[in-house]
Length: 137
Image (cartoon, rainbow, N blue to C red):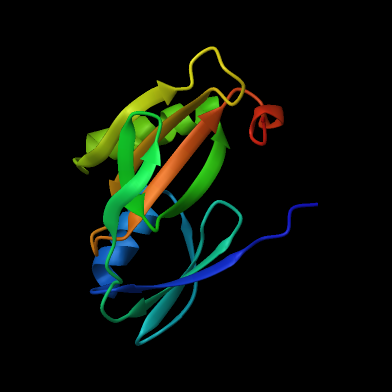
């Protein structure tokens, strides 16, 4: 059984966050109040609160890339990842790291993409052909 995580982040504008997480990423909205909104973030609870987003920098070295730290996201089956990449691309969101494959031919081969929400929070989405490869060593 999946145990969902809960993550709370600051965003600068709730309507902007609703459009991004709802319309672009396809997350359904849950409870909300004047200063926060919850989303079903691919089976996990994401709470977005009005405030100043935290600072992040490209300090995480993964393969040949420096990626924003900290960041968060989810692991998807490859067909779902491809559909999300297509939806994000069509929405005009700018990628920090274009959809691509890394560790090709190695244990843990994965497809990845990085982009930011409208408040600057960095997101990474990974795609795997099966979930068995997610924790490959």
